[in-house]
Image 1 (cartoon, helix red, strand yellow):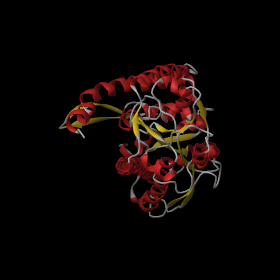
Image 2 (image 1 turned 90 degrees about the vertical axis):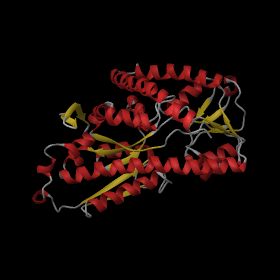
Image 3 (image 1 turned 120 degrees about the vertical axis):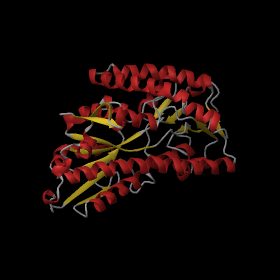
Image 4 (image 1 turned 30 degrees about the vertical axis):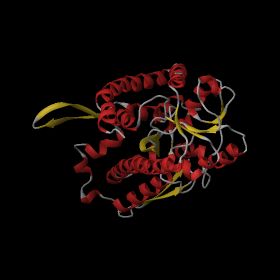
Length: 372
């Protein structure tokens, strides 16, 4: 059941907000009654969080530890969460199923990892030429995305929440110049998800490769190019040592949402105050991860420029063709099942409005106010 409430500014009603699950306990009129001192349980909960990230993975994995620490502190130790990196408790790509089955109470990952079983989940991960972090977060939190996400995962007994964002990624490291769309033909690149399908449409060969294998693969010519995340994580991988060209922008992942998933049955069994603590901690986790990515990438890019790294922008001709192929790939996804179409229509409707606003706000900001 959706909870609605009127919001007021200076006494005047400005509209009705339909609250998604992750906000309902924080804003419900009944919350004060449910969370009184006499109703706080002393029962303690020990939870496990499995992740798709390597153990203690910089920023993203650290955000999971950050989340666990906040929950522990806010609950006074009533709920503790032990974080497991990918492979420590279950394989990385089995994290969703572990939460679904109750083998773990929660997980951290990215929704496009579950594309094989839930095609529409990809809209909650990364869409090529899609919305940036600010826009997609707005869609999920205030534009109807969260309700669709919850509806999508409900048959699996899983509750989704935003747990971070990578921001606009880089286009990748290449050992071949990209001057025309034909330069992608025959090129082997590590690139996953919808971006990989688009890359295949322009004649490239997408390669699925674990993070720990990418450096060696690029060094030995097993692949000709790779995308990863952004300057900070790319530098940690050492790609600047073995690749000639660093391309931008990351058309394939313009604002990748990272997700928390929670077993719904176990979540519903928690006292109301602990549910609210988890929701509040998720908001802090999202902010921490997103802002940490922005800060570290900005710092590392400055170092790359100082080092003389050859940073290039994909030619407009290339971007135009990639955009055209993306449209076809995403339409195919939307047509794969009725719910995927429903999510895509919501996503695209919001994206167009956000783009119109950005043209008179963010675009002007970057072009007129933030001239380098």
